[in-house]
Image 1 (cartoon, one colour):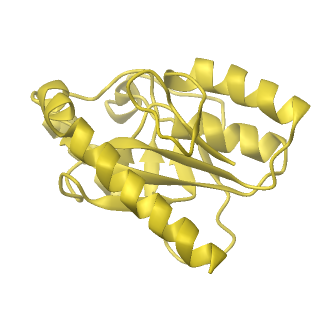
Image 2 (spheres, one colour):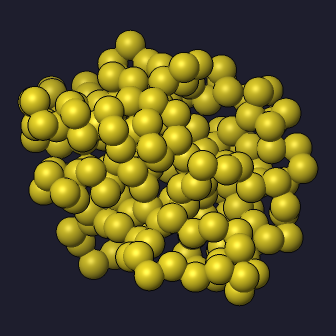
Length: 179
């Protein structure tokens, strides 16, 4: 099953789950309770902490939930804040999720030494639900912006191009898998 966020980030091949971690958790859990999929693929946009360029396509099976205050040593969590469905030993791109978009470029670069390269509001929730239901899962992202002062403007500027690029990428991967 292929899922996406929703609102203005929808795809003909994906079921919308909601914006942010809470809506996604609720709606995806409801879906899994009634019709558990064999595999979950999340498709969406992402912001780059600096390693990936705008309109890059990135695939991942690992997400984190790290808030900026954690990087500033002004917060801690007793929760496991990284989840992965990756089964191979190789290094995976970690996609950070928060209900907030990072706009401080200096703070955002502090994610890179932790192996965290992108941010997307929903992916952590998708992987946590997949983990709870023991469903293999992953994500495909297209970078729309850097995490800096221009994050929102760049997101708006590149969002339609990113959706078109994701559409082509996912349809090509489906074609490869079914031929």
